[in-house]
Amino acid sequence: MKARTQARALALKALYEIDLTGHPPAAVLETRLAEEDLEPRLAAFARRLVEGVLPMRPWLDQYIAQHAPEWPVEQLPVIDRNILRLALWEMSLDPENTPAKVVINEAVELAKTYGGASSPRFVNGVLGSLAKDLDAIREHLRRLQPQAS
Image (cartoon, rainbow, N blue to C red; front, side):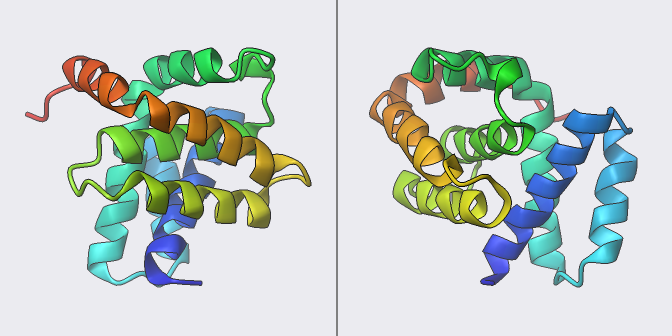
């Protein structure tokens, strides 16, 4: 597994656990980071992903719901929901500006590894639809994003 893919997988596992169990995010993240042997820059990337997604979940979910109207977000498999949140946050708000195509490909790979049989196709379809509106989504989410102190 490529290094950044490994960091995304760690972030996904943390988001999944937080979503499923309600465990304290900071504790989950620290536990996950302690379990993985990530170099410092990759650990920082995983941390940025988790800490970026968490406060934005309600708005990310609104966009996911608009682009997957047949599937209420709360009824999506927990892993799929968090892959979509993670990818949408990275495409729209991550300061590294990873190209959307790369983020979508990475999300599909995560869906193949951690999701169900239909997850990769579903994730690809929803993210492809979101990517068509990415400029407007990015602008809106950036206005809502909490500012770092």
